[in-house]
Every structure is written in structure tokens, then in C-alpha cells.
Length: 407
Image (cartoon, rainbow, N blue to C red):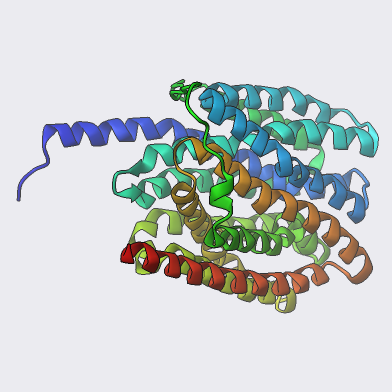
């Protein structure tokens, strides 16, 4: 057996060194999300807001994802200053979080959350664009390295969702603003660790347009799949903690159930390079949508059994982790080079922005009229639509591959 050359070992060490700051950013960002998203509805409930108002306030985050990521993505593509923009967004979000300490009613809370989310919603698309560039080689998207970085985000989420659940169970929800402050401080520290490398921008070049890419059938079906898949997930993102709380589950158990889902995604991210090659990326998206149907059915009709909820949460490895990696890899293929930032932004807007608004507002109205279980019943239908869209995406992708092979 021959050992690897010094150049190869040096290259691998350099790549690992380059990936460390992205791992820290992923860990700190999702540590913030890990306490903020699951427990924001419970904090708002503790402040006395109704479920309809909670739905409206949580929809603010999704609303900022409709346009803000594309604006930030366009700016990062055209300036090359991704790290500088990330540092600005993290700092601005930290300053805006001070408004959470002020009890100013619905309008004030909506304003504070709007300012915070405008900046935090931009961070992952820009970070994912920079990371995808780093892990894409001449052989294509390196799922193994991407997974090893992304799993640190899952670990960060796992720690805060579990610890925060236990803390809030013992101490109450009053310390929620302090948790926001502390997690955003950590996020700022990690952003300043990133190497401030400006990507080369040649202003005399013709800037590529995303429209030729968006006209491709396989890309259209890809975004349709993402839209309906994430729309099915909104019931988990927005109402799951409220749902479990209404059913009598403790905040500690709510944290455990969130933690189970994140533990499942960590295992997937760590081992995904072994499983992804078994199917095409578009077929994986179909499998993930089918798993979403099963997960929503269990959450709707078997929620009284803890083992069924645990099984539903374990499916998060497919419904989120696998689907997310497949999406990032496909985006890297469809939107290369100077289209990368806008491709990630479109993914955030179409995949999380519009579905988030519709899911939060529609879910709030549904839960008021028919109860929280109705949100998950509707998610079964939207997950089935995602299956149909993913099937079309796989079919058009296969047809395009045959045409390109025959040329």
C-alpha cells in the first residue's frame, strides 16, 4: 500500500482548516435556531398572545425569506463580499434582539422580529453558497465534506433545543430574550472567524442571468417539489411545540422529541456519502417526500403514542437532512459560479419563504377553526403533492440526461 503524497496530505489538511470556520458558523447559527424557533411560539403564548397572533408573528420569519435572501444573494454575487455581508447581518441581528426585552404589544413584537429575521434569513443562503463553492471539486459536489460540516449545525441545534427545553421547564419562559442575546453573541464570534476572502468580480463581464436555468423543466419541477415539501414541514416548524403542549407533553419532553429528530439528521449527515450514491438526487427527493407523508400521518393520527411520535421524529433524517443535502447538491449543479448566491436565495425564498407564510397563516386559521391536528392532516395532502412533483422532476432529469448522452 502506498501512502498519500505530501502534497495530497497538505491539500487535505488545508481543506479541513478551511472548513473549520464554516463548521463553527453552522453550529452557532443552528444553536440559535435550535432554541429560537421551537420555543418562540411558547414564549409568545406565555406573553398572552392567541394562536392566531402567534401564527402571524411566526409568519414574519417566513415573510422575510420571500425577498430578503434574493436581495442579499444578488448583492453577494455582484460584490463578492459574502463574509463582510455575513458579519454585518450577524451584528445587526444582535442589536435588533435588544427589542425583545421591551414589552410593546403585537406591533412592536412584529417590528422587532422583522428586523431580526431580515438579517438572519440572509445568513444561511450566503454561507451555503460559500460552502458549496468550497466543497465542489472537478468531480462534483462532495457530499461527504458537506455533511461533516453541516452535522455541526445539527449538533448545535440538538444541544440548545434539549437544554433550553429543560431550562424553560424549570425557570419559565421569561429568560427567552437572554437566550436570544447569548446565542447571537456566539454567532457573531463565529462569523468573525471566517476568512475574509473576497471572490473575484469582473465588472466588465456579462453578468449571467438565472432565467435560462429557470426555464428548464427539471428545475421548475425541482422548485415545485421543494415548495410543497417544505409547506408540509411548516406544521413542525411553527406549531409542533404548541401541539405537544396542548396534548399535555412537558417542555422537557418537547425538547426531547425535537432532539430525537436532530439526532437522526446528525447520523445521516455523518454517513450520507455512503447512501447518496445508491439513487439519483431527484429520486432521493421522491423518497423524502414519501417519508413526509408517513411522518405527517403518524403526527396526525398516532400522536397519543410516544413511540409513534418518536418514529415520526426519526423520519426527520429523510424529510429534512436527506432532502436538504439533495437540494444543495442540485442547486450547486443548476446554479454554478456567479449564479450560486442567487440560486441559494431562490431556494430560501421559494422553499422556505412563501411556504412559511402560507403555512403559518393558514395553519393559524385552521387550528383556530378545527384544532391543531388539522394542520398535520393538511400536511399529508401537500406531502403527497410533493411526491408527484418529485416524480416529475426525476422523469425530466432522466430525459435530459439521455438527450445529453446522445449528443
